[in-house]
Length: 214
View 1 (cartoon, helix red, strand yellow):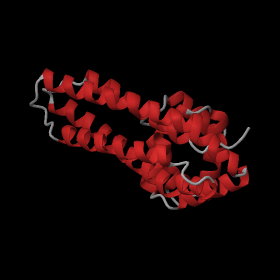
View 2 (cartoon, helix red, strand yellow; view 1 turned 90 degrees about the vertical axis):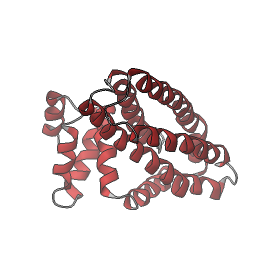
View 3 (cartoon, one colour; view 1 turned 90 degrees about the horizontal axis):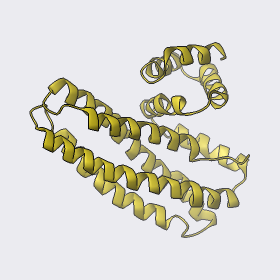
């Protein structure tokens, strides 16, 4: 099987997008504690979305254009459009304080639903069109080297968020080598931080079974 540079990041994003969508529909916007929880989840979601687009623009799409000039134009244009909408959603969420009514919450829910649908279509295009274009012009060894370079440029806080939502969304056949490598080579405390984050997003039994395999 060929390398799939977009597979794990997109699984993480689909996971957290779905969680926020559900939370936006279930939140009582007149309750400050519920709104605060929604805003914390939204903060993680927005940070991952911004970081992912930046990583694509500065690494994967640059690499694609080197060997297939102009092939990144569609994705770059959609990034600009989606980011503008994301800024609007972020500002809208930031104004909530738990004193809003049901109607304002419902309108946020609908606005996010529209963004969610557009974003899913965008990443599906990347998987069906952009990813094959990249793997057509790069070997798997080259793609793995690119991935390492990309990860080295990302702050650990973002990697931690990514793993928090990617690991529960992947089969453990993929998680075992990923976490084994992390456990062996990460700085002191990093692996423990990852496990702590995963306790927030994984059923305890599944997480403990996974950790026992490392």
